Image 1 (cartoon, helix red, strand yellow):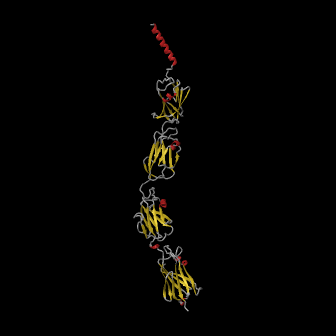
Image 2: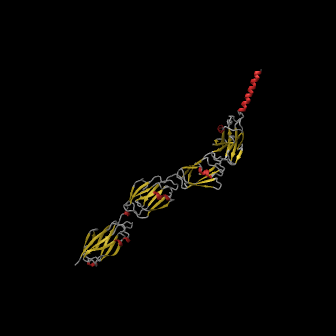
Length: 482
């Protein structure tokens, strides 16, 4: 009995000794902030006060701060300790957003003697007075819209006033465009104004990421996406008719690279289309080679274009005419296919005039035909003519009469009577403008004369504006009478 009492005494002493050497009291959370259910106007760190000094690593692992009403997002941050490791301070890596936060400290949190919490801690708090996330109420153009004009702006209406910087940083438009922003006075309506017209017949996508936030820093719950297609209509223009004044054929009907003859230098070109055309695009779409300046005139609701050349075309010249896809209709549809044809200015009204015949009417041998660019002997001089002779010139076509006087010259070359150098006294047209009578005075037998009819760019010209190609001259001589 004595021995049993001794063992019991020793055991009690050992237990008392152990309890004095080891802490077996579990830690407690004495306070925390933000407290449960608190609405915090401004973001602040989370602070936990424990009753004992804590094992920092284990306790930090037991700490969770969940964002959102359903706790679907873990808040990352940094820990610091104070008050001999009794106070835990958590600061988020990114500033708190407005909304619901749930604080969880698992009961695995332990003090420095490995005593754990007796129960899990759960509390919640709210950052910001406004915790309702913003939404997109409407967007213009609406999602999946088509037939959108190319100069259209985009208008987004939000459910509340927005943090404009957060919105502007988180807009994506594809294909990308350059644009400016315009907000209304409440910052609820954003207008996106492109710098230049949108691409034709193109699907654009606008996306707002969830980082777009309102003025209380509440972010959107989900990304927002909208698509629209540009272009009012999608029928591409075609060339239905292409005519030169002197060519009856529709030069657009036989395809590319055809050659059409019979054009004249003063012709106009008429082009017709299947629909109204953006008239400004003709300047880049239409070209001629050799180059020639031109003006365009539109009619028939801009479906018919007449090209007037500001100077005559070159004679007997093949021109290349190209109309390319720079030509667009009023909906910005490009020409369905390029057209390339050739026309030749060899029409009847583009032929240069020529001299069919030159003759002296009143020689001693009757009418005498002169051969151009040769020496012509005219027989004996006719004294009864008083040194005056009539020459008749027949042209191949009607002549612009005013181009004649300065371009017909009589010259004395050599002979017995140099003082009789020849003078053109009169120009007389017979009938129309093809037959010309020249009265030439002071023609002396024994002298050689040169009658020059000038051609070239400044020479005699037909009524169609075509010049006699080259100079034509006649040398003639009358035998003197004794």
